[in-house]
Length: 128
Image: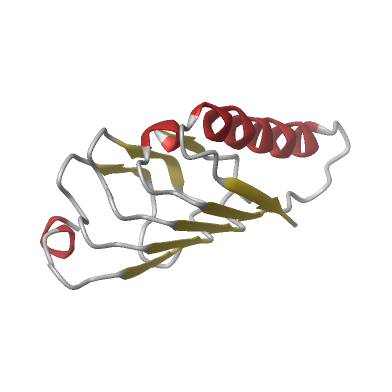
């Protein structure tokens, strides 16, 4: 990831669950400076995605698809992404008897709403 983060002409980054099995994705300052679109799909093994101040300074669109099927995931630093205009969130948890999966889905959506509301760019959140 570190090598990819310093490619000067990389404008679209798509990460899929088959690439990562556990842990976190942590985007540090000055990493992925030219990314405009970041597409996250099926990262069931990832526990968190963190953006530091200064990471992905050109990011305009974040797409999150089915990133939470195995126990949930947290996104942090959405409020400090300086160029973000739009977030597309399409996550669907499987129903369980206790309703815990639906609670996780609701918490994730609220996490996105709360962070994006604090972002000065006031990005649009679209949920499916």
